[in-house]
Picture 1 (cartoon, rainbow, N blue to C red):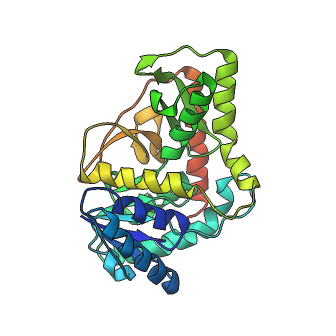
Picture 2 (picture 1 turned 90 degrees about the vertical axis):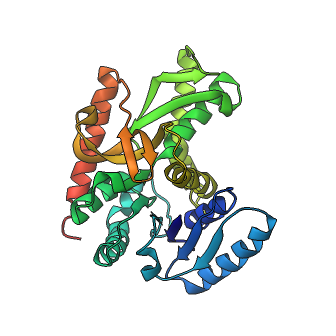
Picture 3 (picture 1 turned 120 degrees about the horizontal axis):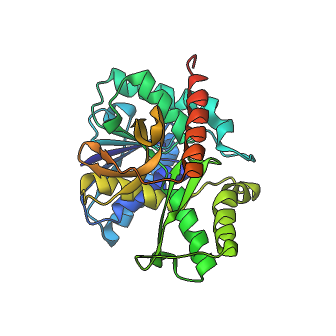
Length: 304
């Protein structure tokens, strides 16, 4: 399977490439970026890492090398700055994403697009309208929302996070819906105290603001890299297990034509099925409110 990583000189793109290299599945990875020296540097390093194990090849390439890829992982973005919301990057990242997507469309790209550039929901909604590509081919990365909720829950319960399972749906951002009815510990439903719920929500809601306030100039490089590779692997080697992703909804959760996060089943053609989970009335209202915001933001990009 050929995977083109566009934005491969950045933290997330290079981390995705490295994480794919560490799997036992053969991926033909092409790393693409407009910073040629960085691409050469990463590829030299990654090629040496291959000798330590893995079943993947990796080369640097140009945009034309992405046209016949099975999957394009798009993580190109403007540099991270101090902020309180991913939405401040919407216009500038739309310019980048739009230019890349236009080249892919003009070149006849027929594969799956995995968008990791933020804010992912309005950008993916806009890309769908811009290209007319089917929703099966358009996936947005949102695993970190669920992982942060999971970490917060594990801290609240004082257990290893691997023992906790949960789901977050809706907007990848402030409007994310943490679904407490999905929380399990060792596969069994668990009742949380008010303090435990508050801790988990605080961790999930405020992780992004706390991280950006560090002014480190880096994003969630490792978790996103591993998660992006897991998502590619779920497409290449489908198991039928649900995976969180932002996808264009077609009536699920009462939303149509807008990309939001949900458990989904992935396969060789991308999106196989949206696994709609039951929400309370408050959770549903929060989901729909987030979708309305996403729709409004995406429509503001129509002139880009």
